[in-house]
Length: 358
Image: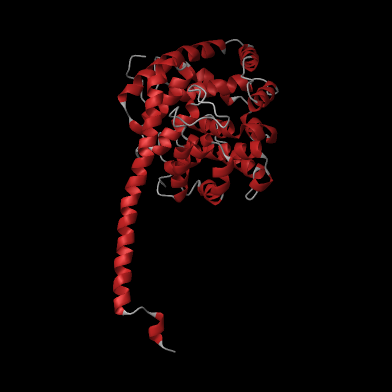
């Protein structure tokens, strides 16, 4: 056998070397160009929302400003956080004082269920589910408000006194029964992931292993093919929120090894995600990789391209699957897209409002 047949000639090797170097140089040039294209698209969506921000509800402004602050640290978003913090202080004062009445939680739960949105089938299903779980409707709202106050550095300050009463109440709620229930998980997976991390964050209970195990029993590896669209979306949302809630909503990085079971599933299923998942879900999938420090993962680039392609050129934002360009209803989808497209690679906790006069 002629060993030379297996190796290029010196002349051929020389040209291979130059070709490889050229391809590497082109690749290095293309990568920054792609990043800049994505960044500009994100900034363009942001410009639309920055102009409309004063007209949005407090809930939408809070949602938007909190996320933009946590990836940029820009001081202008502190004003909205301060406004939200004042409202949060009042809400928690009423909640905590109300707990002196043994009937308060039950009454508030009924009120919450009565006004729960019913515009979509998912909202109607969640309303019916919450109506079956007694005081859970109030407990989950109280838990969320306490976590928001904790994010702002307000728990344990004079702004929110006697918050231990609220923690003690929540410690008596049957969270494990609720959070591992198969019917709850089937329509509420993202909120289940949020609440199990909130409970751990506040030192109320650590049910993370039990809830992850329940989730993986309900959605075992390889189960996606047998799910309808609603079930598939619920599974994806649940998986993204295990990561996002663990990051304390974009305030700290997560361990990629801990969430390898999620990231690997996303990578393997990316074609279906791009074809069948909404842009909201696609963005949260990308954010899961970004929070794990894996911006260079091919999944992130593919989702960024998909988000840019989804932008409506007239409205300047990503519309709903039905084509709606309503800014308020599209805020969740578009702020997530902004984060993915202009990701600066740094996280800012808070903002801390404890020294801002609340």
